[in-house]
Amino acid sequence: MSVNDFPIGLFLNLKDFESPDTHEVKIDRDLVDKVRRLQDILGVGVTIESGYRTPEHNESLGGDKKSLHLQGRAVDISCDKVNLLLLTVAAVLAGFSTVIAYENNNSIHVDLDRDDRIVVPRKWSVTLKLAFPDKANFIYGYEELLLDLC
Image (cartoon, rainbow, N blue to C red):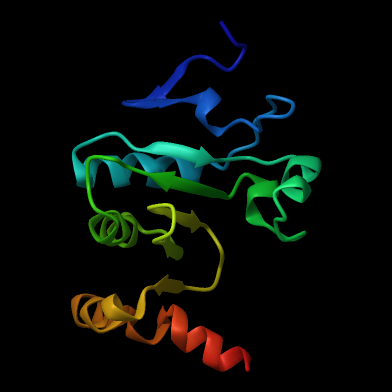
């Protein structure tokens, strides 16, 4: 049994959030609360693909040097029981300020950044803007962001 092997909520274990290289855990309580809320909305457990990252582990993944994973304020989540769009909507409803959907690996990145942004495939952006009119200015399709960077 690992030192971090104990439950912190229904379907959640502290070891789910640890950095795989050292087993260290640094996690913001608000992040855990929002992950719990996400699970409550979905009615199923989720998989934490990446929680806290040590600087070394983050670098090995090619992560941003300012990644909120380094502060325990971000996680990457997947769920094989729901589709990616539903997982994304549930994350917005759970109150995450940043939600980025990754179609290539059927997961989302969520964090507690101060700036709202929801990044999704463009085919979803209009639907999400209608569903969340108060967040419409913060919903971007991947393609729109790429155009802004050019």
